[in-house]
Length: 273
Ligand SMILES: [Zn+2]
Ligand SMILES: [Zn+2]
Image 1 (cartoon, rainbow, N blue to C red):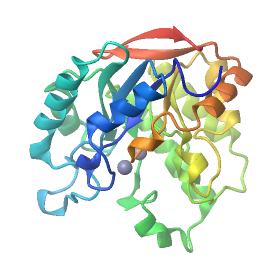
Image 2 (cartoon, protein in one colour):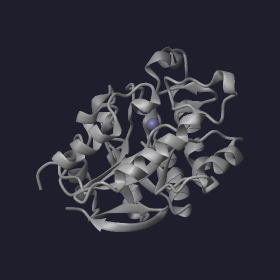
Image 3 (tube, helix red, strand yellow):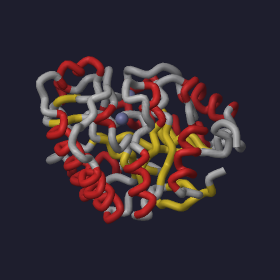
Image 4 (cartoon, rainbow, N blue to C red):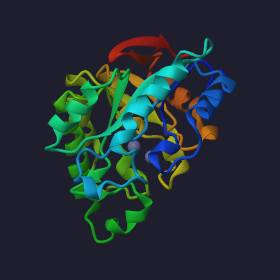
């Protein structure tokens, strides 16, 4: 297989989130050019976990835009025969705000919900504007906290897919400790929750220079029967399906022969082309 043809990209953003470019039709046009079987929008959910005055429209769509977001995806989806358009959302896991999140998720007919940890104690550790927050921090301890949050996120049962499972490596801050026990408890929680994980190629475009998650994490997922979806985390239309050949090769190397597909939050599988 060459390129992303026949695969599904379940993680694309649009300009609605305030830090991406392009409208939905442009993303779908790229998916068709690249021969994807599915494209799933997963724009950043409104920051339900922050007080209204603290919500930042350059990080996520505003509360009032969610109706329009959902309406636009559903309308677009009806218009194409050669590509399936899915309604996803990228939802932050914020401990203590599970009820508020559930209320938002229950209002819409999402095909799937990506669960993301972007914050450690209120610090947006993957935000380039806050990268100075790493200075003076004990990186090994941060990894422990991060994977602890992944476990707690899985236990909520609110999400279908763990997005970019080891996002903490984004800026190249790597732990010195043995990460295998952290991976193991995270993967066990994910498997116990019946969640899938995302193979997210955006890490290749960041200082980490590696797909999320690391091959060792993915191998554990395979051993534990955790299904996978692919995501480009595109923030511009050109990046739809970006580096999917590398992602598919990694999946095959680890042993995967199929990927998960979601419809109305029910999972089935499709062969890896
Ligand atoms: Zn984003
Ligand atoms: Zn994310």
